[in-house]
Image 1 (spheres, rainbow, N blue to C red):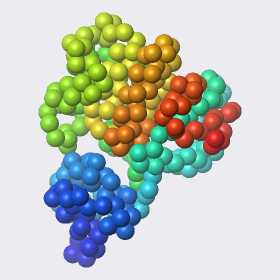
Image 2 (cartoon, rainbow, N blue to C red):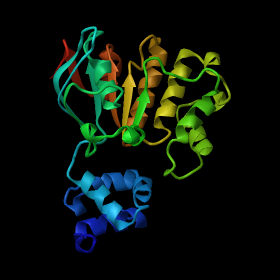
Image 3 (cartoon, rainbow, N blue to C red):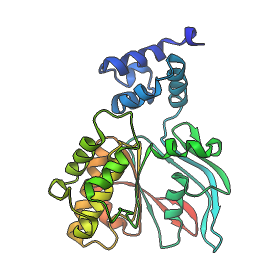
Image 4 (cartoon, one colour):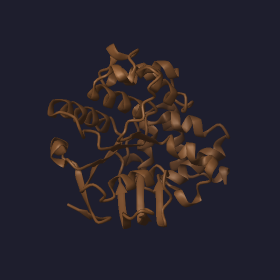
Length: 283
């Protein structure tokens, strides 16, 4: 099979390693060339097993123009609530708001995408990887493709902002640069250069949110999941966090935000999905 690889595969192989400016159109509209340009290190990491592993990686990506897909997904919480037959696609570089009242299913969708929850029925895909086929030992590889800003942030209180981000950076070994250097850069990108050695309790609410965002983006995820990133923040701090999310999205990362305050994101001109009683409706 390796010897019969098509010229398209070979062109992408050369483009990723020569870092040529090969356009998406020059490869017949293949969306995987975007992965080569944005994440050349992903391909380097995927090639440790040789060309065969590269071709497997290539074919898994080349047939999809979505980074996340939920297909008729249902999940019911034991205490009631959840989602019913939700179908949702997130395309590369897209910014989507999940809106709705508390309990509508917004956080449930994010937890399903990160595989904190397992759907009762339906299928979830991340790139071309099926959640139903993921074994427990493969969960870290699935989650490394995601950046997550939790509603409760989950910063380690006994670690500085820098140490919190370094811990996340250590989870991805295929990126160029040392984990510490990448962590410093991520914190600098969100405006926390002066707070590297501050502990979470020494940071304001907005600074804690930015530290959590830096941790989420340090490994250059394909998709950023943000759960209520501006709740309980004053308007000025909220605008700052929205601006940070805009910069992440403009850099090429798809962003999926769960919020009950969609008006705070209007400047981003997002695609909006409204959840009502666990069902999704596009607006």
